[in-house]
Length: 99
Image 1 (cartoon, rainbow, N blue to C red):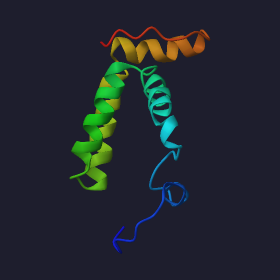
Image 2 (image 1 turned 90 degrees about the horizontal axis):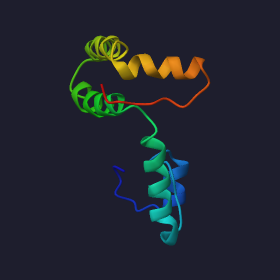
Image 3 (image 1 turned 60 degrees about the vertical axis):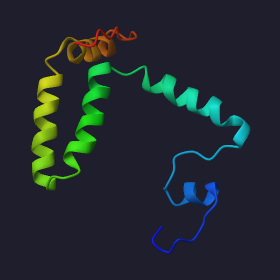
């Protein structure tokens, strides 16, 4: 990245800069596939994950770990935080409510 050298998608994937390299005519299908996978997760967990990625970026590692731990302790007490492990133990799909 720092050299300004242009690289093609397969090389970027090999270097770990991107997760997927697909032909142009498959991009939308891949994007939809990824979105559908994301949507299977609890809405609160998704919201907090996005928030924490940005918030913790400006923190020390120690502060970020404390902050994420506090968020986890909050989330595990929510309805979705209870539903996830319960659904897992009951071997069923979770029913997320966003609370």
